[in-house]
Image: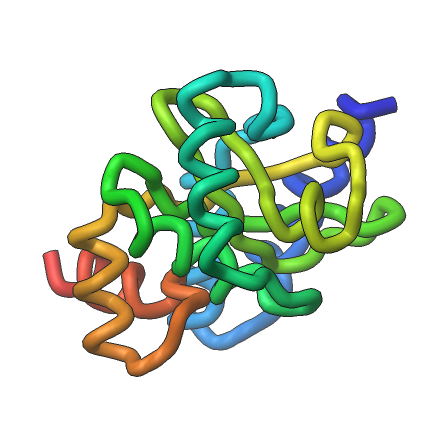
Length: 161
């Protein structure tokens, strides 16, 4: 079941890249598809060090529903060892743009786990970009927002090569 849903996110990205769009849009969707990586989130409680970081973070920060970009941004701002992930996840099998985090190779999603009380290990995630805290600060400063940074990343790092 999980494999089929993961394929649907990749299929969704592939369909977007194959649509009859202008060349710039088509190139952007092809780049997303080619850079997509299926990842699996775990509970932040699965790692003692991460659990301590998150519990300390939650003492001072309130996470918000429908604010995945902001939630993922805030924990990166709290601890620079945490990375920001921008990509897609599924809600009832429907791919949506989403942000979550990574710590020492452990992917975790505080929006889903803490705010929505969802089992992240049964959800599907497809990463497009992974940013360290310096890159997040750069794109936040450049765009004035807490995410999504996929478009800005593409403009700056892919088109300007």
